[in-house]
Length: 334
Figure 1 (cartoon, rainbow, N blue to C red):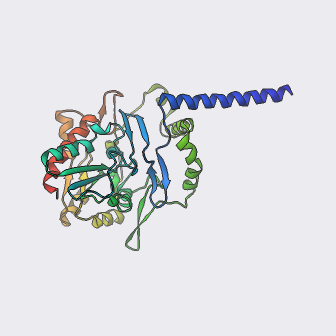
Figure 2: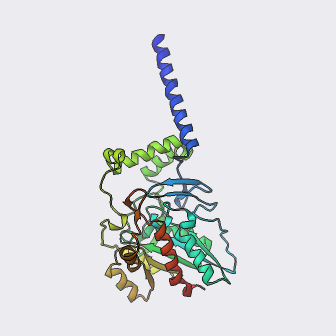
Figure 3: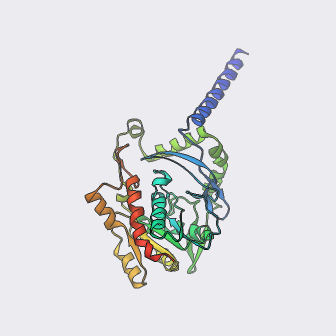
């Protein structure tokens, strides 16, 4: 009887500890719940109207809007008097490291509004972590175009062209019999595992915290986590394959004149891409000379003084890139 009582007390104390941890994380705001959920036909999407606090290379408080993307909530049906620009890309465009008022989206919108005061300019941020070209195109066709953008900017780097699909539950593009098909891989074991844990990830701060810690341990050593010491690699300097599949150029060939490519990499675009763009009379914005000039003459676009590490674009870079793109795009507005 005493042993049973001890077991019950042990279980009760464990439960109370978990509840205390949950309440602490919830009140302190140092860890949140999952910001994504699965949407049929579109795969993983941001939860609507979900606030997020990010401590990564930088610090940012941001939120998704009612239409499941970042930035101000704009109606899907735009006003005839407005010009709408959609931004598509990976975590560099998602920009969880900065507040929206410092994001290139805000700067681009503000600068274009000054240059074209007679037109209502709207810039929408559809950037998503782990996106490559195949994810971007599927997301664009299945979701972004519902907002009727006049211009859609695809921000690409070398690794985006390889199309490796890091997350199988993101919308993806497949080439089947020379036709592009879209899917979100909802029949996989990974999908069923995600769905089983999804409710807890979306409602429990503690469970989400432990899950993030598990993923973190899979990518870096415990010593690096505990001491903060370890080799840091800048995302733009990682080595990626330059072997591009037929799918890459099939997608590029399907992009309309309303779609423009922005090369966001510090490294120059590969010759195979620039040759293709020239042969098909497609214009694009190459940010690599501008980023290299910033690094030589002004500041590193990737360095974060707070953590003393390189990573995604910092606040200064977002502001400089937003202003630069406004100069490049102003003459292309409808």
